[in-house]
Image (cartoon, rainbow, N blue to C red; front, side):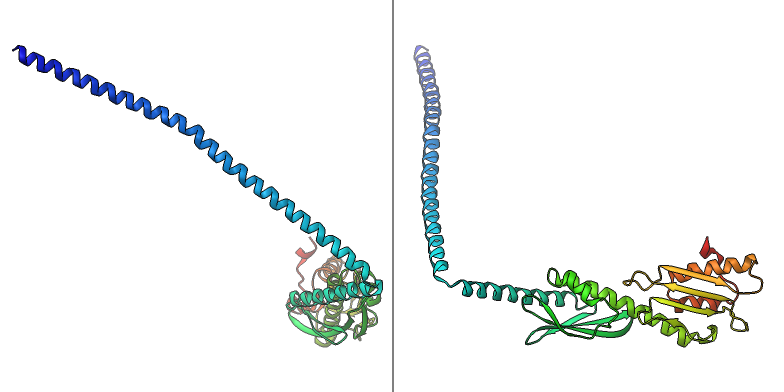
Length: 300
């Protein structure tokens, strides 16, 4: 009995010692970790400091090399003749302008503007269209030099080419081509409408259509019913904006004997509205389709 108690006490004593030893080991491990963390941080800081120092040295080295190169460039420039320097810079400018023109032509190839390089510079072709119908084409032969200049062209004399060139050719060749294209397309559109009216609806006109070379002033006397023997309406269309194919001012008068009739006044007002908003040949197509019955909702 006493022997058993002694063995039990001895086991408990050993167990208590082992547990206490484990606790001491855990505390010791934690202490080591706490001591290692500052050491690790110091190592990281030291590495970063070394890297920063190397980068600063590299920066100073590159800065010194840059200053040496700038000094050599200044010496070289001082040894070059002024005329030679001017010639090189102008040549670079002209080459850049030529590349710019090529890029513009590539960007505008789907808008009716095309071109090809020539020995002098570039020849630009502007193809006009109206309502999907391809019309006339015009060319401008540009000499790429300083300043840019027009060598030859086929632009009609009544298109203000010189005015457009004076405003945009030297400063913005892209805008120069865009504005010129607007003028030519609008002119071709007005001419196309006048030609269609004269050819397709001659029976509705009293005599030939009156127009000027720019086709921005049209006047004609007309009727809306083919069987009618008289031509009761007179129209005057003015296109103040030469970049548009629709008139800016429209005047329609009625010359019939019953000029005071309300129905004729309504028709006259409806005609004016249609001339403002639709191409000429489309207006007369509407007349032929409707006969005497015009859509009065157009003037509402």
